Structures are given as structure tokens and as C-alpha cells.
Image (cartoon, rainbow, N blue to C red; front, side):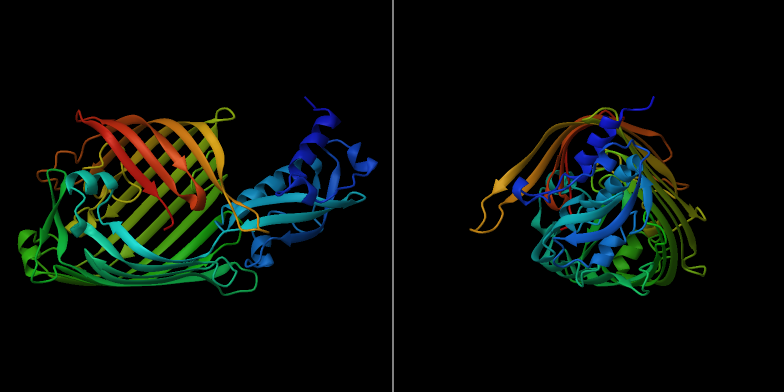
Length: 478
């Protein structure tokens, strides 16, 4: 059924004229009768595109993210969608606190566009304090919040270094791991901004190491007189981004790692055949697609990431790895959402050394309710389903100096209920009863989302082995 002209015009202006800031600073827009009287099929031409508020970010970097250009023509209703897509893409760069795309003025059927942003703070020289365990519960409960299992030091996080959405990371770490880490991401190497590069380097050593998995839990050995593990890793990557939402990455790397004689005696399969050192090259290809309203906490859209990689090229280490991650989110009502997330992986051949078998409980391949456990394997996956309901959405006003706008810290609180299923295949499970069986869990909780994409999660989960409890999680760029 065709909607009335009045509805389309109201929808169009509600989006295009919603500028950030006080009402008296909003641009005054003169609407010709020829525009106001047309329907959703009215053809509008894009005129000038102006950016404001981007003190550091280059305009051409912002232009790269929006799905329209000067001279493009669209029906009125399609243009509304293009403006919203552009706003989401700019927000997903993590460069801005807020983005508004609005009409500056009209020239007949041509619209001049103004894009207003409020930039984030980009430079963070910070102290570093982070437990090394896989999640907060493992550190707080099983390790009794032991400070001996904490990394501390200093780190430099510098986002948008040159105004081109590039990222510099530098860490000097002491404590559980003595480590030096450096990375620089997204050096553009062509004028069209389709090709980029990333480099990273890590070197470190530990006196304690996870040498095996026993009864579905990590087993550690610590030696005070020697370092049980030393490692060096170098990696370089080239990225290709032809379309706005799709990126291809091609990477090569080299790793050298050694373990102590004690570790090799406790688990001869750590590197296989009782070896105490290993060196190997690796190659990787990754394709990622993101069409999400907000990447850190999506409530609408889809994302897929496919990876294939090869580590080693001889009998000592020879493994092909395949991984897929997918996520889909749907709004069920204005404040209710459903999310489906899947993670799957495969390593060939199935016979692998211990350090190459980590699966459930690491990274994104985890099940809520099994935070205290790990499940090794060479093939398997996880499915997580979540219903969320937005409970609160407000901003905390922070007083500012005279002449400056006060800061407002956004806070969104969601209630949720969830269910998980997962499986990991291990040809040699040993004493680990969770391998080679379907695992299930469920629960309910609260997510707190605030500025700089920081998310706190409080979850009460039940698992299939009769256990339940409160679990804490945190996600952050810091």
C-alpha cells in the first residue's frame, strides 16, 4: 500500500534535519514547495557534501564510508536509507561519539549535505593491569584473584594517528608475562584507499605455562628458576576493501617458541615427540563482511568472517586451519532484539600437538556457563542465541569548563536470556569428559553498554553438568 506524501516528507525531514547540538545552532533549511509536494518516488540529486566537527579525521576517510557521492540521484525514500546507512558506517569506525547526516539546504531538486561528527579522544597513554586468565571468574574464583597471575606495565593506544583511521599499539608488560608488543594497523598504500597494510611484533617469556588439559581444566606448571616459555612472533598483512562492507586480508607471519625441559617431560605432545622448540611460518586469508547497526553491540544486521590458514610446511608442524564466524541480529520490536551467533573451526590433519588443539573456552568459541572449563579439539563449533530487551537508555552529564559543551556519558542497559550449544571433536580426549559430546547451557543476565564501546556483562548461567552460578565479563578497546 502506498503511503501518503505527508508521511514520506515527515520521515525524510525527521532524519535529515536532526542535527546534534542546541536548536539555535542547527542549520536553517528552506524547503521549496516542489520538494514538499513530491512523494517517495521524487528523484533527489546529491549536491555538495560538507564535513564539520572532524578536527583530526580526514574528510576523504569519512567520504570512504558513506554510500553516496556528489551527483548521485535517488528516490526520496531510498535517500533516507542511504543517509542512515552512512551514519551507521561512520559510527562503526569507532572514531566518533556521534554522527548526524542532514540536509544543509536545497537548490531545486538538489540537496546539499552536511555531515556533523563529534570526535572521540584518540590518544591513551595508560597503565596496564590485566589478569591473564581466560575470564574474570576463572581469575577471581579459581585463582583467588592472585596478583601473581596479573600482567602489569604501560601501554600506548593511539587511534587515528594520521587522521586516516590508523591505529598504533605499543605495550611494555611485566608480571606474569614479560612482553614487548607493537602493532600498526592500516597504512593505506593506494590513492583510492582500497589497499592497506598492518604489521605487528611480539616477544616475551613466562615462568608459568598451561602445559596440558586435565579433567577439562587447564593444568599449569611454574618454575621459579627458569622461564618455561619464550616466544617471538612477527606478522604482516595486506588488506583489500573494494566495497564498503567487505574486506579481504592476506597475511604472512613467523613464530619461534621454546619451552623448558620440564614442560616437555610433563607433556611430550606439547610440541610432539618431546621437542622443546618450534619455528614455523604461516599464511592466512580472511574475508569479512559487516552490515551491522553498531559493531560492538549489534541489534540489527549481519556479519560473516571466513578464514583459512596454513601453519608450518614440514613434519614437525603441518596444519591447515579453517574458521567461520557469523552473527545475525533482528529487532522484534522497538526495544526487543534477537541475536544468533555461530563459531566453527576445523584443523587438518586431526592429529595435532597439544598447543594446536585449543578450542572451546578460548576467544570467541565459548559457552556461557562453562567459564571454568576448556574443551580441546580439532573440529567443532558453538551456537549462541540471545533475546535482549533494552531497559534503560540515558546519559550522565559531566560538567565542563566555561565555554565548552558538557560531556555526556551514554549508558544503555539490556536485560537478556540466552541459550548455547557446542561441540568439540578430539581424537585423543584422555581424561577430558567434555570432549566429543554435545554441550548445552542457558541463563539470563544484564548487559551495560557505555562510552568507548565498553561493555559489562553480568550473567547467571546453568550448564548441562548440573552447575550454575554468576559470571562476569567485560569487553573493551583498552
